[in-house]
Every structure is written in structure tokens, then in C-alpha cells.
Image (cartoon, rainbow, N blue to C red; front, side, top):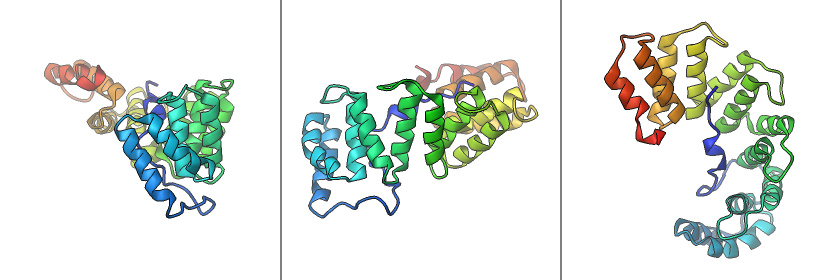
Length: 238
């Protein structure tokens, strides 16, 4: 499978609001500081953002912990520190933050700051997967590869379906490839094209590539050189 994990490190620029009742709410005094920190990030003033957000994160607010963890993961305005990112993500995850659970899984998956551990990655993705399309997609990818979980294309298909319905472009690409190759379902070029076109519209480069291959080969339709060139040389493919 070519499904990429490209979105997994792009955690700056959002405040994860997918927390449950365990999460400590922000006080009225903390809200302006968090907004000011986000404004600093928008201006690439990460040092200023750290100064504003660190007290809030240490005070236990999961949104702030997520943002600060992202900054340490990326090394923006601070020395890159995967260990500190992991500490902050786990603190937010303990309060029910789904994106934090996703990010902990990513660090285990990539071996960033920890020993690479696919089983731990799968467990963390599963912990976020009921409501997080990105985690569902990642867990599906692990089932396709058999990393940390038994290889199971049917299970991967089910996870990709849930994630795709939640809007994940990578999961749509995964479904398209399953239908194209017949790895979990009977080959169905029409279904493959449907999911790949949907993912391509979201600038999923691997989907654009496979769609281009289908257009070259005439899989499920007449060969279309112009459409193939458009897919294969799309700006999002670099």
C-alpha cells in the first residue's frame, strides 16, 4: 500500500477539541493567552508562543499540551525534543484528547524519541480510532502491513471505510488500492476509480499517481493520456 502518513506530523495550527469530560476546561484567564499563542504561531513566532502556552500546558489544559507538544516535535522556536513532545501528548491523551493519542502512536510508529514499537502504535491508534479518522486510517495501514497486529486485509478495509467516511483522503486512497488490486475485495475498477478520484480531489499524491496509472492502462475505462498526464504531473505530486 502507498498510503502515506504525511498528515501525522502536521499537528501545528490546530487546537484539538476532541476531549471528553475528563479534560480540565480552560479558565477565562487562560483563553486569551491560548489565542495569543496561536496568533504567534500564525506569525511564525514560536518562541513567543512557547512563552505564552507553556504555563497553560503545565497547568493541565490538553489543548495547550497538544500545541506545545507539536512545537517540541517540530523543533520550532525550541530545540527539537521528542521526549518532551511524548510527555505532553501522553498528558493530553490521559484526559481523553484523541489527537494526542494519535500523536503518541505516531511517535511509536516512527521511533521518534522512543524505540520503534508497532504494537504500541497500534494500541494508541485503536484508543483514538472510534472517533478519529486519521487513527482509523493508520490502524488500517498497520493491518495491511501486519505491523504490530496480525495481517488482515479485511480488517484494514473496514477501518479504511470508516476513516474514508470521516473524510480521510489517505483512507480513500487505501480503499481505492484495495479495489484496484483485489487484496481484500474482488477487483472493481469502478469502485477503485470512485475512491481514488475522491482522494485526488483532496490532493492525495499517491491517489493521483494510481489514478494516472489507471488512465494510462485503461483500467475500467478507455485509456486517456490527457487525464493520465493531469494526474501524474499534478502540482501536489511535486
